[in-house]
Image (cartoon, rainbow, N blue to C red):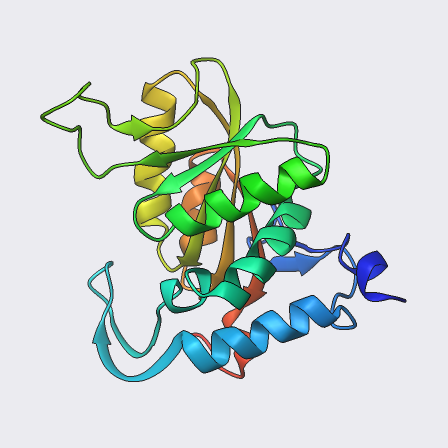
Length: 211
């Protein structure tokens, strides 16, 4: 199987079990393997950390170190687009700041692939100046969208973006993340009626999630 052919098959979360499952093997995809190496080198940090969720962790995934790098952006765009291109959506968005470079890379790749998806960014709160928007970018009410993020733990950041998009009148079809830490986030999103997909789980980096 060549790299291009393998890249069409990815992972999603089982609606029945909440576990990430594969559509088919992707480990022969050179881009998937290379991005894993880049993420390991640039984004995976070990130590004592407190996560956004308030949980203590022995490792931290700093996705922006990869998604804002030249090579990382060049890999993330095509791979994340492959992950969601079967969805019936017209745009991709996500919570600032982690999703900003991801949705931009995916939008650019989608145009090159002949299936253009616009990108939007969900702020933590509504601006108090300018046009006073909370969601920046080209979007419209009634639009079907996917929410993207760099890492999934409990899903709180994605949940915020989902709720903001729904309040604006968009239809959230699915969420997709680069790395799922396997700490309950997929279950929480599924409870919101949102399908969840991931390029990697933390096990792909040799780390077991907490029991």
